Structure formats: structure tokens, C-alpha cells
Image (tube, rainbow, N blue to C red):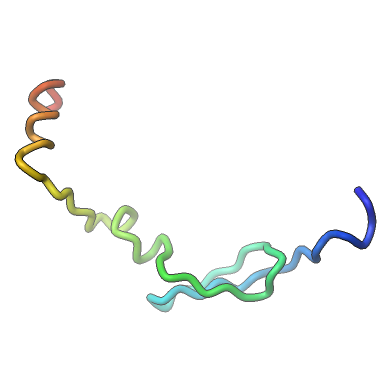
Length: 66
């Protein structure tokens, strides 16, 4: 690698809109994000499946999933 052309790799403080904050490594010192693993519906268990015209039930019946 060539010297003095790469950005510095520093500790980065990440702040979410929900109030959660954590540290990662990045080339920036601070980041603001809208969704993190503490507030995303997939990780919190509050995920809702929008079933249009019974598609989910039809899929489960077709492949005998439930």
C-alpha cells in the first residue's frame, strides 16, 4: 500500500434516532443513523407481515409449512 493516501481509521461514535449509541471503526469520528438493531422491527420482534389477498397462507399451504 502507498503511504499517506489512505484516510485515518478511527473509533466512530454512532448515534441512532431512538437514542441508542455504540462505537465502531470508520474513517469518520461520528455518524447519525435513523434505524439500528435496537429499534428495527426485524430485531425487536414487532415485525408484521402485510398479507395481501392471503398470499402468505397460500404459500404456507402450498409448501405444507404449517
